[in-house]
Amino acid sequence: MTHTDMEAIRAIVAEGKDETGPLLPILHAIQEKIGFIPEEAVPVIAKALSLSRAEVHGTISFYHHFRRHRPARHMVQLCRAEACQARGGEALAAHVIDTLGCSFDGETKEGMVCKGGVSLEPVYCLGLCASGPAAMIDGRLRARLTPDKFDRLIAEMDALFAPETLVAPDSLVESGS
Image (cartoon, rainbow, N blue to C red; front, side, top):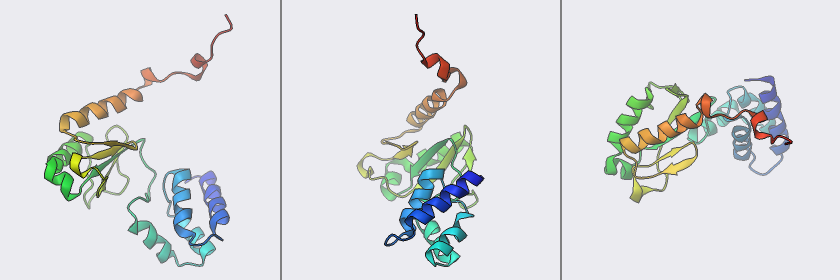
């Protein structure tokens, strides 16, 4: 974690500590600003809110939305709920794990970076139960996923960030001619 991240955390805590029920809004603001809730933030938050470190840590670990590690460049959140599993979610999960080269089982650290700079996280319902199996890939909901459709989405994601497709800022400026 950088010095700038820590300054941002202190500013967010200072700004939100006097609000009613400040813990969740502060945690959301920190994650929005730096992408995750670093361990170093826990004592800062606890002291400012007169809470124990255990209370802050318990809140962070209770809500699956909060990340405790810096996320990868891309995020794949695969629905693991019963409705998606009934519609082929287990086969899709096996394919995703094989394709990305990592898992979301108990042996994998949260926020593990898989092949291609992807984080794989389980989620338990994306609200697309009738259209499963479902995933959220880089914040976009995807329904009726098959292994082939997943592979196409990952290939598109890779192509988007391939060095040859990135445009240098100078090339965006029109010439004066």
